[in-house]
Length: 443
Ligand SMILES: Cc1cc2nc3c(=O)[nH]c(=O)nc-3n(C[C@H](O)[C@H](O)[C@H](O)COP(=O)(O)OP(=O)(O)OC[C@H]3O[C@@H](n4cnc5c(N)ncnc54)[C@H](O)[C@@H]3O)c2cc1C
Image (cartoon, rainbow, N blue to C red; front, side):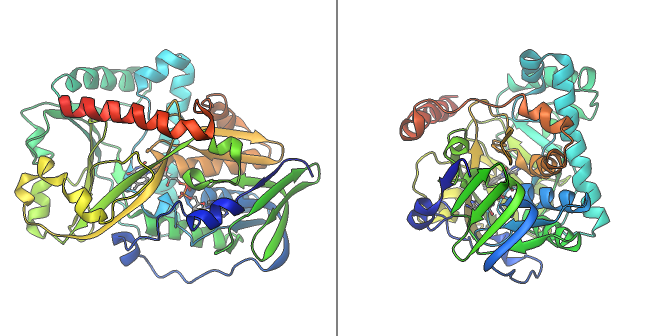
């Protein structure tokens, strides 16, 4: 066996999940029943081993099993324990670089192909939800990027033009100052860019539904089975967990921000950044007045606010990303401090849940796909991973089955490592982020 890596240190040092306990989140409280899966005990084998039971890993497992492979998923915690069960649920087409930036960087054809894959990813999710009857409050009601500055409306108009003219995506339009009040009842916004094809959903129930569909397709799911070390050699891969060993021809690494010590090279490509969400008490009639058309909303601040309504009429609100490695003692309180700036009319409204999760960010904000020996991986969706994770899973499964089309396209845009090595990358990154956050405050 060749390359060897170990997650044992980070598992014991951080309680495995980057220091955040499984949150008492709104999603966990409203999760569809999903019994515990066994932990891996003893020796087992598969054609494809998937490490990580989030949307990337489950989608890879589902698609590989449907293509005829014998697949096993090893999840360190519970299915949906990572970002896939905690996120804002906002389905945003495209990548974290604007269409104009993609064109400037890769040229029109490649930019169009990359963007088209994300459109396909959105459709893939809608199809999976329909085909497997996944009850996840899927709302096909649009996504709004809310403009904090008048100047934002200028680049938004250019972006809508590039989307329609270059990307063949005529679903976006600029909302001007006169109409923004019909979209979101906030004094903070000057207008926005509306994507009619944006959507939102209950991410944990989507992930659990995907897990059930994978299981129906023949995938074996193991929970409480963190991979402590992974060896790759000419004969295949060998994963060691606390109580078992799994051998397979190939492996998919789908650990995203929680890759920790399992693979030093992949860990060096991403920066884990914490993001926090609060769920208010149910708002009843007041909810609709806030976001009358039930859009998912994210604004243009660097340290952004993002929010939407839940099926039971709560506001799920996020504000104030943190760049330090420790988390607020009272998450809901820390998040709700940012609410009055967006919705002053909600003064006195209580938060009933607050939770956090880790977002993996890359140097270019573009995802990192690739292959090393018998290992395939995709991570680093940089805050726009709801669509990308399901798409990535499909592309990873195709690559493991020998078809490289979309996978190869993403592999060609692999971001470089963070400068400064693992010790310096965090302080350097924190300095950079604080500078941009300060610019937000200074306007
Ligand atoms: C608070 C928050 C809000 C977000 N909001 C949005 C949003 O609104 N829209 C959007 O597009 N994106 C959003 N994102 C990003 C998005 O959630 C992620 O990009 C996406 O869920 C990543 O999916 P994944 O399956 O790759 O990783 P995860 O869902 O994190 O899954 C990785 C899994 O791997 C497991 N694992 C790790 N190491 C091991 C190991 N050694 N052995 C076994 N298992 C292991 C973990 O336990 C975890 O379950 C948000 C993220 C967060 C945290």
